[in-house]
Image (tube, rainbow, N blue to C red):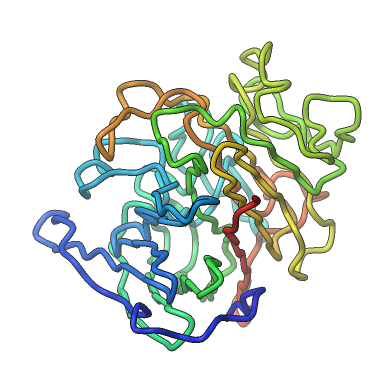
Length: 364
């Protein structure tokens, strides 16, 4: 379990977990779990896709507002293809041509990314599965534990994979995500969450004024189809240099097709994954909201919602291009085809364990 980074304040009657109906998937009811801390800040998570549906945190004046892009019903998530707030697996990000070799056996996955590459687990990834949920209320930390068993060869992946994801929400406005998995055959595993943040709370505005710092000296450059070349390239002197805080929009103009129309790149956080380290800090000047991300993962995919447009409508508004940003903690894209990258192979007897924490605060 994640040890959240801040000490918690004394509990109050606001602490707890409530449940509400969130529609149906076929004949299966979907439940929305709302975790509330002692300050009244709260998050809501669905047992369909493990979707973080909302995050209500205060601005510098104490006003709570939702800073997560998403929808007011499960039908909204089913109707759109951008993985809003969902758990991603078995493999977050891309695998070139959907092909990889594991222990001398070749596997072919769905080419669900422009009919060229495999993306985010395939045609029906973990984002579109019903998870078994267990609410675990506490005095100062509220938790929701989700479990899913992915059968052997689901979406083309070998091995039965038993997955547990635990969301934690504490009195210091820290959202912790613990990922665990075990397999009965060698397989791939690279889990993440696809939250879109907009710290302004105005979900119809872009995030180009948000100031971001990413704690990475190198990134993995990509080809025109967003597959890594295999290099680790210094960010210094490039549009990918976020080693000091700068507005997201400062260097985003002029990105051509090669770069996916904006940022959609993996940054190298640590070469030896395992320890909890800072990933990024984002500050929204108008509201004062701050997001700090920490993770045990070696990389983070920084994505600026390059493909949103007015057809994406939710929570009473439309989500524009650059309407949110993602910090998807992860192993690197296409790792199975790059032995120089940290391995995403999971073997029987081993346990996949990674942790990520998103801490929300304000700057006066």
